[in-house]
Length: 411
Image 1 (cartoon, one colour):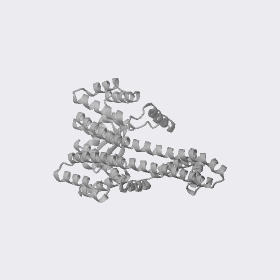
Image 2 (cartoon, helix red, strand yellow):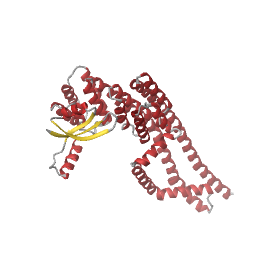
Image 3 (cartoon, one colour):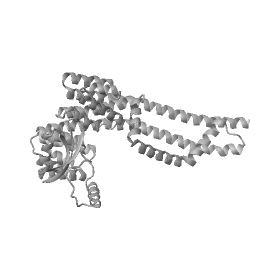
Image 4 (cartoon, one colour):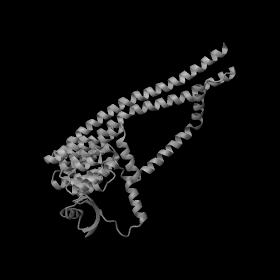
């Protein structure tokens, strides 16, 4: 008998950690299932004689040798594996094919480790759980549910669709913001160039003629001098301030307040709520349609949100759902999700189709997120252009005012 550490989700959605003796990991997983638990991770306990240095060396050595997969690589291997299993290939042959066609050494090493674990008799979910940096609990939980229900191919297909939609949504956001970011950077660079290089060229001209600079021109020259002297220091201070804010936001209290503030912003808040709703409903719907109970699904979906205000709302809804209050009403009381989300989830509860309705809601919110991004870009680009034009026009006007004052002095 060997000792195993395990992490599982209980019938009420709570996370349980413990240690049990079993002949194998498969026996441990079966025992946990008989107890009504959903196993998320199971691994042999470390040997008691290992020192702290040995444990740390093993940990960091494993991390350096096996880097985390990128989201694109994870989505690709999931889709390929789903296609091959759906075509009737066995798991070992499918993994061997993926190893032979791996697009990077990191992906090949990960797939090789998975295949070796499967060939040693471990379930695929257990093999995946040994690489938590590459396969999060949501991924492992869905694969484990698919293996338990004998629907691994279809589960991987749903999981691949989930990963691809998440990537598409994130890519649409990042791609849409590239042009406004470049435009803002160009605007700041152009203004800094005018203040630090162009305006100072006129100072000797005024000094030679003994003319006093007009007030606006003098103010701009002073601003340019300050930028030349303290610009790098200001950028360094800004970077340090950003790091300090980031450190503060790692604490639960400030991070929750910040995430709630983001959801209430006039324009960005609407986009953030749509993205939050899309992520919650897509994850929840995928879990429910693959046979995961509601409370356990909420516990897994909570960790996939990335917004602490949304996570707190899901925690409160989970507690109310345990008491029989349903899901839609507790979420409505939190005011962090769009009204459309609440209506669709309530309809799913009333018709007994919560999983499919959550997936339908995810499609609606993903479309709304893309439209909100387009509107945001449509607002940002003209706004940046107008601000840049106004700043450049102000600098040019101050130069013209100074030249006119020289002309008056000559007459």
